[in-house]
Length: 358
Image (cartoon, rainbow, N blue to C red):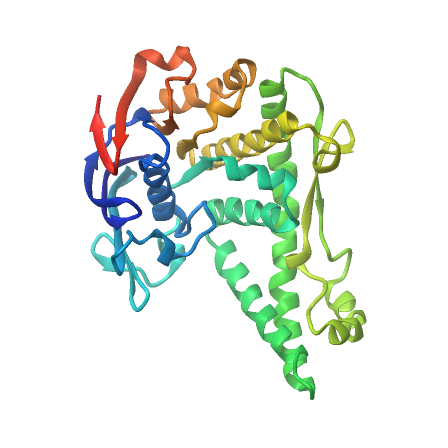
């Protein structure tokens, strides 16, 4: 799978951009604030319909304009054309010239894994970041997961809205609780099955990058311990007091341990950064294993943060992608990628929202 063409209109600092890409390793070179990360963000947006920077659509529109367009051609099992238009009043998404009606028909056309400084939130941040990691991975690999997550989220919002009312509608509360239990139990099951599959990959990746410095363990911590329906019923008075649903998959977490100690509490900055990269490497390996072809790898300014030893730990993943005719995009302010990749690089200069092949 690879992105063969990218088209941007009024996206971030790009007025107009049309560029063709081959499979292989692409290095985007340039000073800060020239638009390197914006290219990666556009590719990730096409794959997941969200920004890895955690911002909304209005923040991706070029200053002084009212809408953006992002589109491209993806070559995988056949060719597909993606077109996205976003404004405050209107949003359009089409695949091969047809409006996308169901996200399950769209997600997976372009698969990406992004490595970026924000990944540190996987280790240092709240449980929400780790839940999103699980949710994205399951959405990328199991088409039924996203609709299930959407059903759960909608039922949760509705139940929380009821709990905030002065007079409680008992019938509606029962109905939304039943929906919550049905979707939530399935989410917990799928997350529980994911962790034993992803954990060995993350452990191996961490050992490779850290040179066997510590032993990584990942433990899924569901909010629901046994029976969701029973626990939800027991928590009802507490929910009413807090005016919110206090148990369920929306409160799950993943515990990350280095030598049996919390990485968030006791890990050094270097260990946390290594762990964040290991999690993303595991994501890429898992997606590759399930689909038989590597996702497009987006590596945003990560090499500059790693020492030579840790940098070389990424090499096997990059080399496997290259051998499978995959595609890697890496941003750099200077030429600090692994020298082993030097022969097969395609180098691009980015300056002021302009892209030029070197």
